[in-house]
Length: 229
Ligand SMILES: *Cc1c(COP(=O)(O)O)cnc(C)c1O
Image 1 (tube, rainbow, N blue to C red):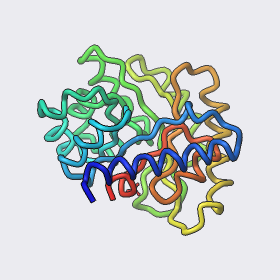
Image 2: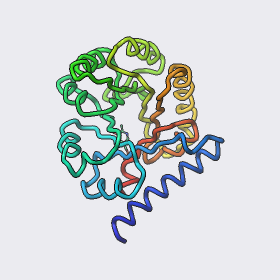
Image 3: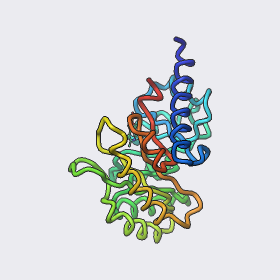
Image 4: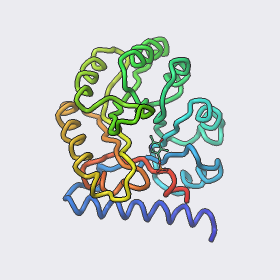
């Protein structure tokens, strides 16, 4: 099959599944924005997707790789909000603050303070999200759901950051239904902690679990492999 047609079909299939998940829980489909996670995708595929779909959010998890791609004229022309969704190292904070519209993986105050200082120098308000950790794995980034509201309050005091939601990576499981109570807990915390926020996002769900996440209230599911299959 023609590659462009394949990518359009992937997108349509995901959007259709999102719409069905919204209907199943009486949510408005229009409040869900699909984030295209482009970290593993070929340049050509990313351009084809953006040329043919209304996608307005992209996610990258490596600073260097993202800069190399999205600063080139053939990528810079796309009006997409760029999200950093990986683990941010301190020595990459300056570049990340300059380049990205959103840093979605904040899990400690130190990195947030550093980003705020860089955003100040750039005269920019950087939108950030707090990453919640859902597993006990040492290597997994994120802060516990119990500690997240305190971190949000601290972030709200930083003048050049605007905290605007929660992001989480669900534990690996084959059954999305098992994840629904977990997603729901995060959604309840999101509604409580970002109640007065104008612009807010709940970034839950990936290729294997976005339907369960959307059914439980995700507004910014992050899909990579299914989109670029
Ligand atoms: C890679 C990645 C995704 C996309 O994962 P897929 O399973 O390929 O859809 C989503 N979120 C984060 C944080 C990622 O690193």
